[in-house]
Length: 499
Ligand code: HEM
Image 1 (cartoon, rainbow, N blue to C red):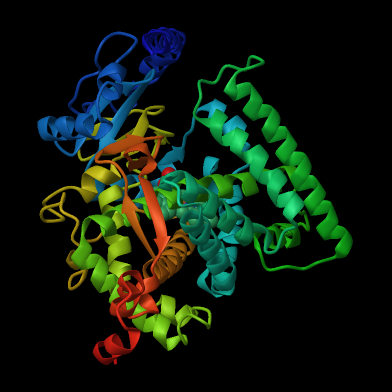
Image 2: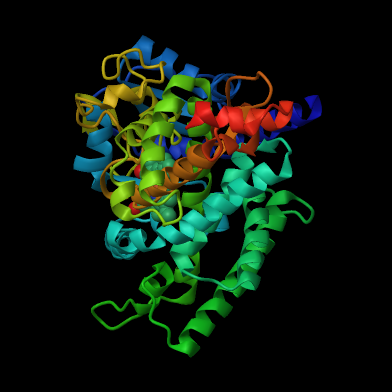
């Protein structure tokens, strides 16, 4: 472990050293707005900046300490990049909505290469707009309502297998499988099992390499992931070819991509389609899995709330003839308490704690200069956990969403502006469906006493929330009759109590 951390710091040092000429260039190019001052804050040590302070503790403590000391806007220097961090709703709106054209999305090149450089979230302007419309229309309520039976199948078969195994499962890991399958469903509709398994296996390798150190040397996780990413392109190529041969015009995301023609009659290349498919899978998987894991934890930790949610869901279950009929879209739209639980889980967990942009010009904000080339980070979690906007922000309290809507731009679990999440309705639908089947037919207990958050990189309950699931037989059988089977008293006698 020690060797790993020493290696980490050595690599970090070298990478910041290599980025130094870049920083100097930034400084030289700075000055046209020199009547404005830089935001308050510290740029830390030479080369390393404040990277060690950020990574040696919970990053949110780092942000919070800075916010308390400097206010809503402050500068720092992380991983070789000068940054401005923004912790107020107005500042986040400035960057993401009203002045979005001055701030482009920015990701490390190694990540861009892994997902595919044409994925929409790396872009701005015309190309981004075009792709976004396609993705948005395939994830719009009218389209995803048709996915309900498929999502129900995925949720029920996952729950059955967790309960059937009798084993302690890693909830986050299992939720990732569900959200991957839902991603596949929304992209391809029905997909042959062979293709699905092949995509799953190679995507798993890409996922592993994505968060590893980007050394492209044979044997490393990053190198393996790049090879798997190439194989994903081949598989996607075969799927596309088969669709074209069969002349299938589907309404799923792949169908939208294949049918697209711009004003000059140009279609999307296979590379662009592949990068955007992998991009959507990537954006959908860990985020949704993480929030679903948190929902299970929050419900488990609050038995009274769980009972109330069960009651709400049981009424729907009963009206569907004891769960024999599938859920309808209208039913998923009328689960007020469950909806509030999902919103509060999104707030508490703040899965995307912050996002990154880069200033494309020198920008002035409230008398401060944000120099061109600097990274800009709206801190969603700080805003979601600010007592000024959410009273007792560290208490899980779904009722806070009951009467008053949050103040504008204070609740942004799905981001804001031109890059806001187009998958937000699908993510919520998945959560409603999972909760419905979970609480009406199953029970679960969290194993172990570890509390706390782990970042991987999204926040998840520690160790992925180890839990055990079992079928809730009390739904169908009167508890007295059930217990009776165990102590062999007369069934006839107890029927009196249960009728
Ligand atoms: C609870 C689950 C989810 C959360 C918390 C979440 C959150 C976010 C956030 C905060 C952004 C904006 C990032 C930024 O501004 O830099 C975003 C973008 C995006 N999300 Fe989600 N997301 C979730 C689920 C999904 C799902 C299920 C899909 C697709 C099926 C999806 C697809 C995307 C895409 C494609 C973008 C990029 C949009 C663009 O750049 O225009 N997300 N998501």
